[in-house]
Amino acid sequence: MSARSRKTGLRTRAAVIATAAVATAGLGVGVGATPAMAKVHRGVSGCFAWSYGDGNTSVTVYWHNRCKRREKLRIVYSLGWTNKTYRKVVGSNAKGHKKFQTASIVAIVDDGRA
View 1 (cartoon, one colour):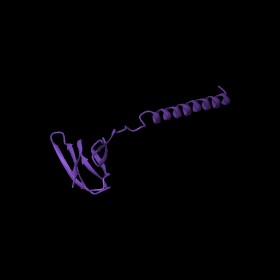
View 2 (spheres, rainbow, N blue to C red; view 1 turned 90 degrees about the horizontal axis):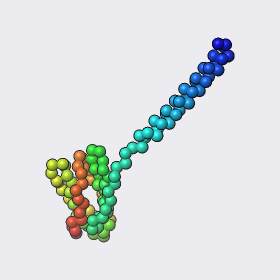
View 3 (cartoon, rainbow, N blue to C red; view 1 turned 90 degrees about the vertical axis):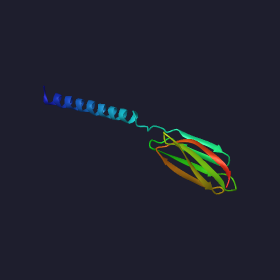
View 4 (tube, rainbow, N blue to C red; view 1 turned 120 degrees about the vertical axis):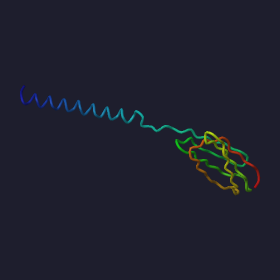
């Protein structure tokens, strides 16, 4: 084998390896690169518009009191073996949030005027 054909063979092999590396890297980016989308729950209860997303270890509930008076908000959440209740008085046109660790939301209710 001549020196010239050896160089050509090395270049060809290098080009094939580089092309394969780029193709493999492209596959790696396309497969599993998109994070899992958590489902977002939205709703309205009386004066409150609320939302929360399914998290891995926690759930954060966001709310907005759309009325022009103070209202009572009640969030019922489950810890797997029991249900608990979180209550809050929310001012008019106020927004807020609450983070619950290792919980799932059972109900979000407007309990009326404060």
